[in-house]
Image 1: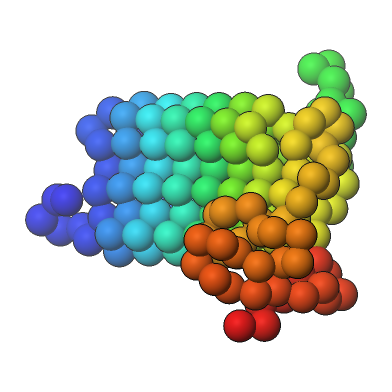
Image 2 (image 1 turned 135 degrees about the vertical axis):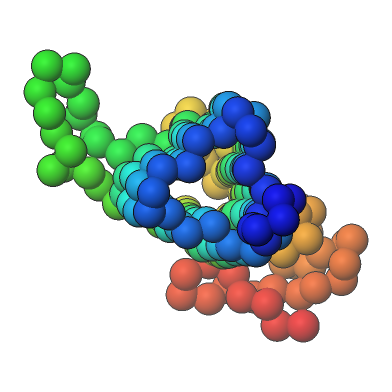
Length: 190
């Protein structure tokens, strides 16, 4: 970390002004943060990541190498974006027609995990602590704690806050948390 900042930006990375970067955040090689974007405290932004413009990333997020977080995407706290996963922000883009007025917002809620090479189609919400398997193509809202895989993504189970798959009775064998069904997916009961 430099002497005058409480975050780290690698010498090959670019940060446009104005931007906000939280304490303890690290931005690595060849990454670019565009204007009016915000990154919370203690985030890790990997190599070759593009953020923004106008993107809001919560504290404690980990964005692995080769990810672009475009305008219209919001990441709550503690989101994990696996290597080379993809967000879209325009549903039907054309190179010859400017459509930035058609950005469809995407919300990734607290603690969600998005696996490597997954694609998130714009205009949806990924629920709290949901788990998107590597290579999945997600084109609809995902409930809290849902475990989804495939193309198109289909739910195959439930995931614990700790990331382990839950048993059929919504218990985690690793950390012993228990869940029950709620209006937006599962909720922790103990």
